[in-house]
Length: 73
Image (tube, rainbow, N blue to C red; front, side, top):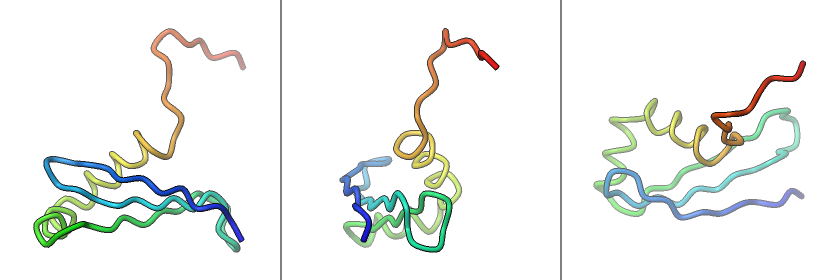
C-alpha cells in the first residue's frame, strides 16, 4: 500500500480535493485524482481539463525549478 498525499487546492475561485499517489502498483509515473467540491468546480474542471492538468503538474507534482540553477551534466 502506498502513501496518499492529500491536498485541498483552489483554482480560479473553485475548491478541489487533490489526491497524489506517488507509486501506484503497476505504474512508473506519479498519478493523481482531483475531486471538485461543488457543481461549479466540476463544470470548471470539465471545461479546463488541460489547464488544470498543467497547473497540477507544475505546482503540486514536479519540483519547482530555480531561476538561477545551472545544469551540471
